[in-house]
Image 1 (cartoon, helix red, strand yellow):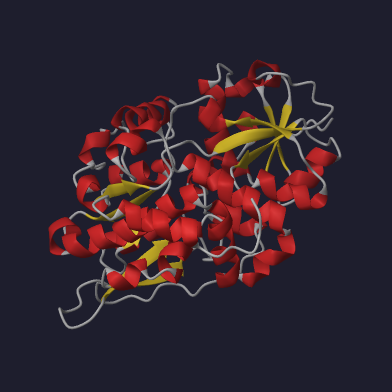
Image 2 (image 1 turned 180 degrees about the vertical axis):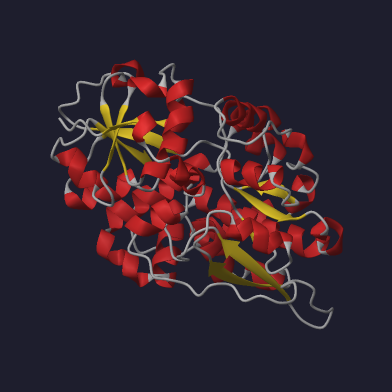
Length: 377
């Protein structure tokens, strides 16, 4: 077994890079066969428009690639015309820097981004004035995939083991999760294994690797089907959310609501018919067909699973569980990952959730049930 690196040997300079790599971020893009998108252009705010035509809305992805298997709901909203009928003309662009997307949104060079909670809190604590208006992943996405020879039967068995990371900065993701599992990060050894995490696991070079939903499911195409400690089964923490500049909450209120409403319609559709969503996604990005149908469907279902909680069922898509958000921020502050403590309610808002979810659910249900799929579930 590789001796790897202790937590103290991991470079602190990579800390904040790791926080940006949440679901749909560069972690996923690096492993999904995705293709690069152009960096966002500067200039005027993307939203505004007139009453005579659609309103342009620019989404700045916190990753350097746009295509990803977590884009099912958005793909549905595009394909079935939900954006169009709401008068929204969306565009999607990616940036590489961890906090660049939040800065671009705050300075009106884009309308939305969806940073991880850690990046959001770090940005806000450093004066970036943005607000989360819609939680796209209310359940924690990260976990640890286990090698067959690890001997790990439960989370506490990770003590003394070696965990593979794609980059040293990923320790900032693994550390809080380990802490919440009752394990001191100093009891773990880290080994930086780069992009070959699945192979390192399969060849037992490490005992476990950091992974996330829609990531480990993809390994099945290589015959790698590990047992996984899935984060959302152990911690009540959120993941990414749609954020906007605070001063745009009123100025672009209608466009913000409508963009999120189209997304919510896509999420409801996906809940009802993940097979159709997978087909829509593959029609948008045929390059994912190389993964195989079963792998793509599993990834779409896994993403749908983290999109929904009991609260979204009663409060609506995008609802933020304030207690869960504050718990995560408190953990980051206690571990000195954040420069200072933050108050979730200062930059997390549920004010628009009711209006966002004010759509014809019966119509979307009919769309999902009548969609002519080619594959079986």
